[in-house]
Length: 188
Image 1 (cartoon, rainbow, N blue to C red):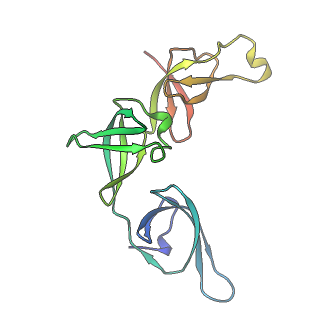
Image 2 (cartoon, rainbow, N blue to C red):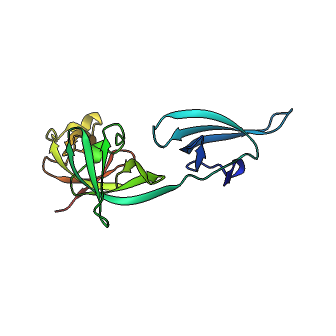
Image 3 (cartoon, rainbow, N blue to C red):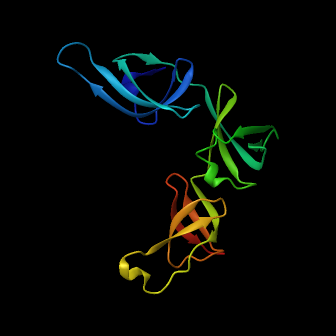
C-alpha cells in the first residue's frame, strides 16, 4: 500500500484498476477543512496525463509491475516484435505503444519491457545508445563565428539531434535517450 504521505515524483500507484506514475504533486492545507493532495499523474498504459485530488491519508495499492529485458527483432505490418532472452517468448507492440522508444529502435538491441499484470504495456530504451550518423552537413571553418557550434545530424533510426561541427557522416555517436541529446563521439 502507498499512502498520500508517501507520494513522490515517480511513485507508482493503482487507481481504478490501472497503473499510474506521479508526475507532480502538491500538499495543500487550507485554513478550514482537512488537508488534501493535488497530483498530476500519467497513465502507464495509455500515456495520458490527468490531474486528481486526494484527501490526506488515503491509501492505494501498488501496481503489479515487472521489467523484462527483451531483444528487438523486426517490424512487420506496423507491429514491432521483441523476444525474451531467457524463454524465447515473443511479444508484439503497435506504433502507439512504443512511441517513446520509436526513435531508438535498432534490431538486435536489448530493451526493457514493462509488464502490468503479466501483460506488456511499454518499451524503454537503454539510457545511452550508440547510433551511426547517416546524414549531416559538413562543418565549415568559421561557422562558430555566428555562435552556431552545432549542426543537425540524422541518425540511422531517423532521429535528428544537434551535434558538434566535427561530427561527420558515418561516425558513431552516443545519445542520451531520456532527452535525445548528443553525449560524445565513439572511437572505433
